[in-house]
Image (cartoon, rainbow, N blue to C red; front, top):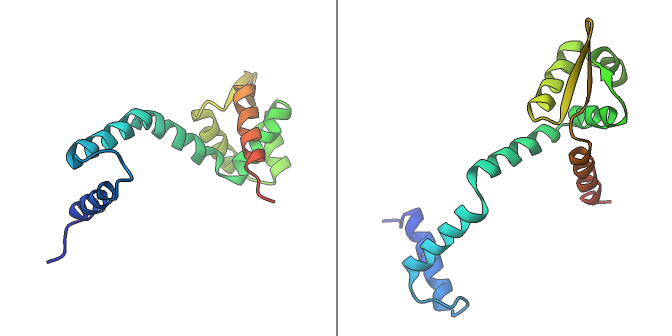
Length: 135
């Protein structure tokens, strides 16, 4: 009979502890400490928010929109021309960016203008992406 996934993990952890690479002999206490560490440093709600943010900017069109909107305020019709896309497609991407609070809108009569909601955050995102660029 094959060992279960959990027992394999336990066996691996036990081998690590037996190698004297970690200063403990209590396998269960060490496993509990590891789980607590994961809960403390990787709060699920925070990780979920950051994951959604990364997904929002992990799209070429949305990155282009953010770049354009970081330069100046634009309406949907300007974005559709600049990025050669349909109005429904542009609105879809704008909605995602707006839901993540990366952009905001301003109405003027029948026109809706979009701009970056938090310039500092968007600049940090672009700086991060530039730093992460692999030549």
